[in-house]
Length: 464
Image (cartoon, rainbow, N blue to C red; front, top):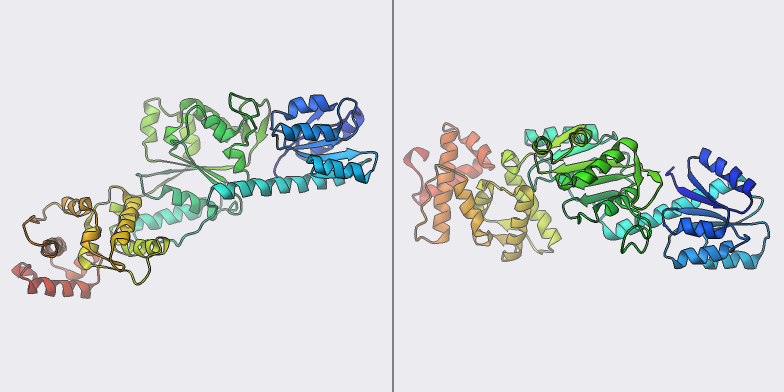
């Protein structure tokens, strides 16, 4: 059960004390108010989720309190109590904005059932708000990697996902750290709860505390209504703190407190709230170096890196690149609504395989999406690739002598392909099967290419 902040409002001390004691034992955070005016002052901060309120009170009625709270833009849910049953009063309370209506004397067990019901409804409303702003639990088709580095990564994800351990994901930009974080969430017992991604580098420094931990109404200039905060939006689920290295030192202290105490204190609030949130963080920075330079707290680093996962760069996944190109072609065609059959010239495919991809998988997907948009009838050619890709592919293969002569594009690509194949065969000590594996093509495809290149006189004699 998620812990709710509850206020009991009644001018009879015995009722307040008995109900408060019972709800505290049930695990709720409970506050008290003896009248409507004191209750309104406290509720105006916006951090009380449910108010259990008597209708008849000496200063202002419970129904008037509901109206004032609603007019102030506060989202507290009200359960109304009265010893004077009246259909008209019940209707008036509901019209004012109350969620539930109960007749005194109230049985503690019945009150607990009503609280659970109201709490569940608030949870559904909060989840709907999150779903409107974020794509929740979106499961795209996953690529099946065969590289040893990715197989090891899959093993680590499978090991840590069922636990509640914090996870630190490191790796270069574009290596899929966000995908790894979502996989950890989807394979965990929290999979049905929210997954909230947060880009720490994109949040304004003066608002980042409020965004993460929430604020009460009037906590600072412009805080015209209470905000729950992303940590509480992720309650029972996972919060993904991307670019954690960008978090200011002051916020690093507060995050360390959240991890150690499992509680959140909103800006402007005097009350801490329990938060059942799993934290997964990611960075492309060297946090150990930042710790040495005093720019990242060592104690926070150790808390975050209880379980460390490194996302390997694409250049270390040579066995997967050829199939990954085809995977992104098919997935991009669906996402971009490119109709018809999708295909790619062998020359264009070889250039994509040879390129070193400094931007990793994000760069590859962007380049392939661009090529699909430019391609005629879904057939990708070298002309559809950005100039820096073809140049980058050449630069990434030292030892390849590829002249930039005045020949047409196809002839230049053939010379490049010839140099690429010859180098692969030389590096494999003449073993064509090994060379085909390095090139990411089948052995029969390699022999076919050798025959084509021989026909055009582009092979060395010892390669025939």
